[in-house]
Length: 85
Image 1 (cartoon, helix red, strand yellow):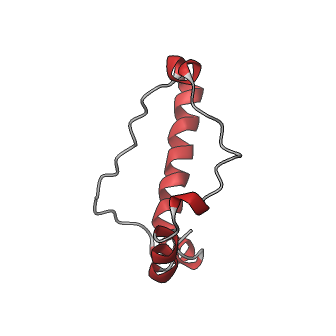
Image 2 (cartoon, one colour):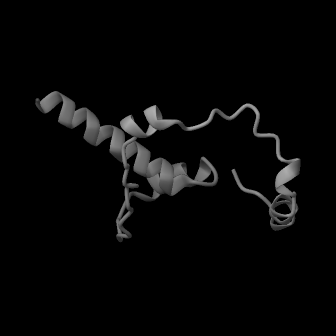
């Protein structure tokens, strides 16, 4: 989801007192006892040759075609790992 620069500025200018946080639970000690630090998966830029029709299809899916390609590759890798065990 993207947000316009104007809307982001509007949100940044809302005073703290105007933000309703009543539906957000407090983080007590029990939360921190089981909390885990999770490192984000970093991406590696590469040059990759793919068939023109494959690339065209992914591009036709709209914005985020490279993320979609990554998801497809990840699914394949996870399937291969699962079946090799």
